[in-house]
Image (cartoon, one colour):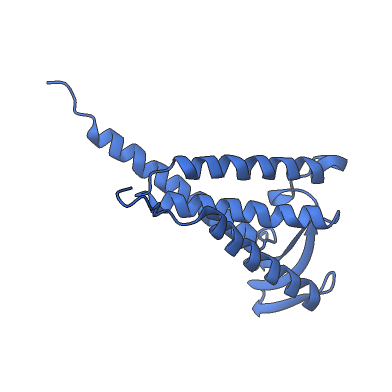
Length: 170
């Protein structure tokens, strides 16, 4: 840092952007959709359908304590992701953004678990006729998924750079 200014994207700013977008879309979905009701966006392929998920991704449920277990897991994950962000090189912009998006998605779903015992608000329903539908999801889930893919790509690129830097003995 030549000028003493950290040129990283602001971790908590990225988290806040995801959380705000997630909260706004969930509030709108809850206002517009009743239980069991769906709104077609692209025929039967993409619909808006309100679901409350008390478990985790893909309906993973750990019984009566799922809500509390997943709240603790989310808090630990956000702390871990922030520590990774602080240790990431400023030049690795992809990883910095990825960490902020994953943490923002975790925080968005954490807020739902905190607000309501019904669980996380999911409302985006995608599927192809004749095949099982994808689990219903939300903006926080999109941030986690895209951030996780970007993080994996960043880590893969780092491994590839390290492998290229290793010169075989002659």
